[in-house]
Image (cartoon, rainbow, N blue to C red; front, top):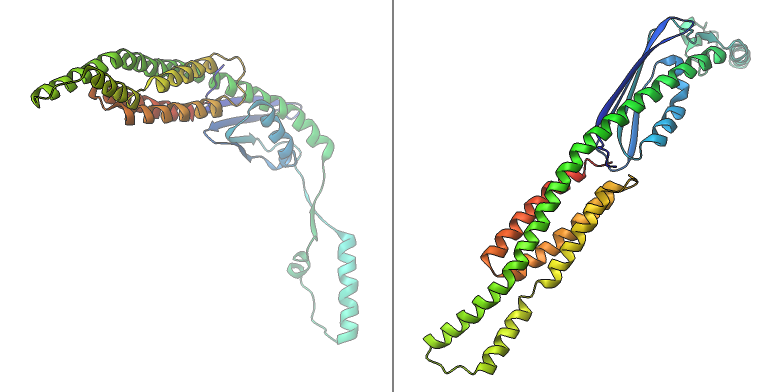
Length: 293
C-alpha cells in the first residue's frame, strides 16, 4: 500500500500523578533518507535515542520533526555543586600559592567557572515514570501520522495510476500509427520517383522500404515501454511498501530513456507529439513519486 512521505500526527495526554499535560507533534516531509530532529523538554532529554528508535521502527524514510511539550510541574533535574571537585581545586590553588607566592583571592564566579563544578542532579526513577507515559503518547502520535500518510497515499496512488495509464495509452496509439506511417513512406517514395521520371524497380523499392523500416523501427521500444508500464502498475498494487518510492523512481528512469529513444527514431509528427505528451506525464510522475515513502 502506498504511503505518502508527508503528514502530521498529534496526541495529548495527562500524566499521572502529576496532573500535567504532555503534547506531541510529529511532522513528516520529503527526504531521500530517514532524518529526525527532536525538540524535547529537559525532563526527558536523555531519551532522544529511544525516540529515534521508535520513529525508525515505524517510518523507513523522510525528514521527521518531533516536538514534545510538557508542563513543568513534574520533577525536574536540579543543579548541584560537586563538592569533592571543589575541594580538589582549592587544594591545588593552595599548593600553587605556596610555590609561587600568588595571593589573589578567589571569587564565586571564578569557582563556578571551573569545568565540571556545576552538575545536574539525577532523578532517574521519576524521569523513568514520566518517559513511560510520554512514550505511549509518542506512539499514538506516530500511529496518527501513519494513518494520515496512508490516506494521502490513496490519493497519490490514484493519480499515479491515471498518469501511467495515459502513457500506456499513448504507446498503443503509436503502435497503431506505425503501419500507416510505413505505408505513407512507401507511397511518398513512389511519388518522388514518378516526379523524377525514373523507372522504379519493384525489388529496389522494396529494399528501400525495408531499409527505412529498419531505421525507423520502434517496436522494441514500444514493447519495453509496455513492460515497464505494467511493472509500474504492479508496484502500485503491492502490499509491501519497502523501498517502493525508490523502485518507482528507477522504473520511471527506464520509461524516460525508452521514450527519448522512441522520439529520436520517430521522424513522424503524430508519434513525436505522443512522445512529448508521454514525457510530460513522466515528469509529473517523477514529482509525485518523490512523495512516496
